[in-house]
Image 1: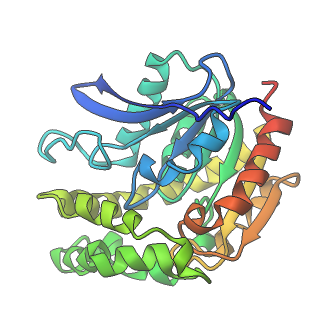
Image 2 (image 1 turned 135 degrees about the vertical axis):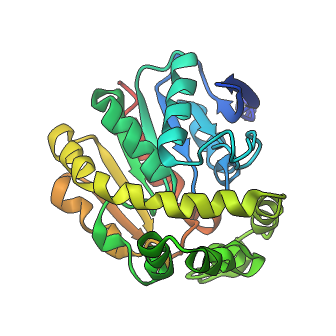
Length: 294
């Protein structure tokens, strides 16, 4: 029996418009590409356990947005922290890497970044894996009320009220709420994320992005139209106990994608942390059937 050879993951940084964009890269250069787009408040670190399970057959790219992970954190006076700018930078990264087509794994903030990439060049997307990533008004419920107040008022009071979302207590909540067995979730994850959240100036970056999230809602009809018209092969693996992006936001995908492969998992926001053993077979099977020959 041949010995198992571990996957090598490269940790690279590319300069784009004067900003260092960090990304993890693994797998054969000529294989179908899978782009992994992370959520808040984490980074490509959230995919550290998934990448080795994909890179034997796929060329995997997992970037960090500016202000997250190992990417640069330009000053707010010189860079606008918006989802538009994130998508432009990731799009340029893919162009510089010579990647013409790719499947996307979108989660949380990764969804609005991914939707912008799809709307900019609809034929570029070979498939979708959606994990707690929203594209429907139904998916923004109670958690979003204080953020919507900030959108509506734009006042300093409503902005400062959101600083509680940047605390260690909230970060731990994001990782553990809705999880039936907390021992399956490594504490390293929230310690890692919180250390980066706590960097000087980072709180204002996050508050800017909370405000910019309002720009995603007007895109939803165009995203839904893209789903209907292009019917990208789609796998939904969604933590159904997520308070931030509840399952109310998962079900509407079935309206626009009648062939969607739909799985609600008994977990919370960061499903990969405790459901990797369930998700990897689903993801590998989906990619093998839908993406491997693209």
